[in-house]
Length: 496
Image 1 (cartoon, rainbow, N blue to C red):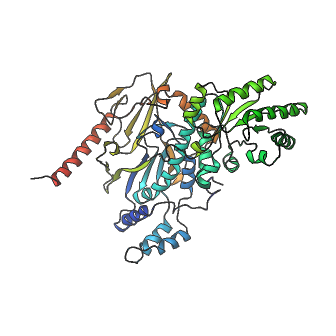
Image 2: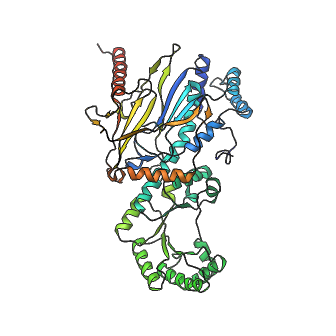
Image 3: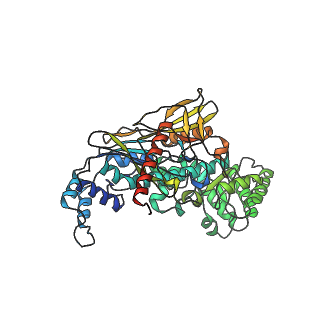
C-alpha cells in the first residue's frame, strides 16, 4: 500500500484549486487539451533567510501520480458546480473527458535529500497542458511543506552538532496530515526519532518518549511518581524533572536511578522542559556526575530552534539530546516555502517549441524559459556551482554560468570539477518509473549533501550565496524573450 493511500482515499484528482480545473476546461473547450507543454516547480528564495533547502516530498508525489484519475464520485461532484448565472460550470462532455483521462506526463524531479537552491526546478512536468495544469496545486502541496520542514530540521541538526535531535511536534502541528508530513520530513532532514507513533508505523521513523508532567502530578510526591514509572517501565526511564523544582527533581531522579541500578536496570537520563536551560543543565550534570550517573543524558525541550540551541551551546549548556517540537513541525518562523509552478515552454502543431517567460515588476519573479535541467559541479572539497540549462536548445558552454540577477557576474568552472544532472525520471508516459527509496537512505543522502555545502552557505545569518547560474545560451535566449516582450508592451502603451 502506498503512503498516501494508507492515510487518504484515492484517487486524489480533486486535490487541486478550482482555477486549475477552469483553465483545464478552457484548454478542452478550445481544443488544446493535448497540446504539449512544460511546467517547472521551484522556489525563489531559500527559507529562513538561509542559503539552501533540502528537497523532500517526492515519494508522496510518486504515490499521487501512480493513481492520478477522477473517480465517479469526483465527476458527480463536479457536475454540481455552477457559475455566476446558476448554470453548470462544466459541460457534461468535459466531465466525461475527465472520467476517461489517462495520465500521460513525463515527470522528472530532484531526489529527496538533495540540497537545492533558488530558481532550480525541483519538479519538471512535460505532457498535455491540461494534465500539467491540474497537477500544479497537488505538487506544490506535497513538495512545499516537506521541503520546508526538512530544511528546518537540517538547520536545527546543524546547530546541535553531533547531539541527537528528537521531533516532538505532533500536538502543535497543522492537523493529522501536517503532523505526519512534518515527522517524515524532519527525520529526512536529520532528526533521529519522533514522538509521532503513527509516523513510526507508516514511515518507519524511530519513536521516542517517556512521561509528561501529568504523570508526576497524578502522585502526591514526585519521588513516588518516578519510582512508579521505574517500576512500570524500567527499560525506558527518562524522568521529566521540572514539574515543581528542577534541581530537586534531579535529586529525586538520582534516588530512583540508584534503585533501578540495584535491580539491574539503567536510568537513561532526565529531561528539562522549562527555566534557564543553560544553568539548569550545568547544575543537573554536576549532580548526576557526583552521584555516579556520568552516562545519564540530559534532554532538553521547551520551544527550541536552531538559534536557541546555538546560543545554549555557546553558554556551555550540558544538554546531550534536543527535543524540538512546535518550531520544527510548524516551521514556526516561516510557515510556507513559497514554491511556485510556472509554464516554461509550449509545443506547436509543427512540433517546434516556443519558450515562455513570465515578466513582473519585481525582477525576482521573472521566470526562466525552456525545458530546464540542473547540472551540479563538485570537486574533492564539495559543491562548486549549479548550472540551469535548457534541454531544448542544449548546452553551448558546459563550464560557464551567468548570474540571472546580474549578467556581469559570471563563473568559469574548473576542469577538475565533475558534473551530474539532478532531475531524474519519475514517470514516463504517465507510468511511474521512479524506484522509491527507504527513508533512511534519503536521510543519509541529506547528511552527505549538507557536508558538501560550504560552511558559509550553511550559516544562519547572512549566508554566502551558492553560485547558481544560467548556461550562457539560455541566458541570452531569456534576455531576447524579455526584450521582445517589453518592446511589445511599450508599443501598446506609447504616450504621445
